[in-house]
Length: 143
Image (cartoon, rainbow, N blue to C red; front, side, top):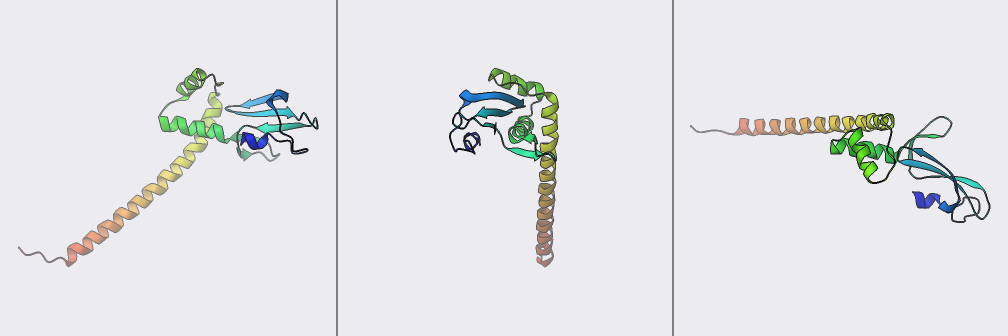
């Protein structure tokens, strides 16, 4: 993702982090404002894909933040543990509100998936039970 963004759309020259003029950090995602050293235009470079945008086209939620919330749920850890890991890795910590927002988003998807999985398991169990009952009815037992 980042490698694809590091090209100037105006002159097709490679962009360099040497020419970063501003960085906006949103959780684990960053938006860099990088000046092209060839044509001198300023470009936004995003470190993560956007999965939710506002009406004005600005991104409100990034993949890397959703994936961190999913990892947190999967590992069974909370906000404090997640930020401890990030801190040890010298990665800026994520705010509790941002993690919670992404946790709710990921949680809805996980609940939907679990619901579908349970329905499929119930349907399979019902089909197997009905198949067993039909075999039992046709079986003549001699006592």
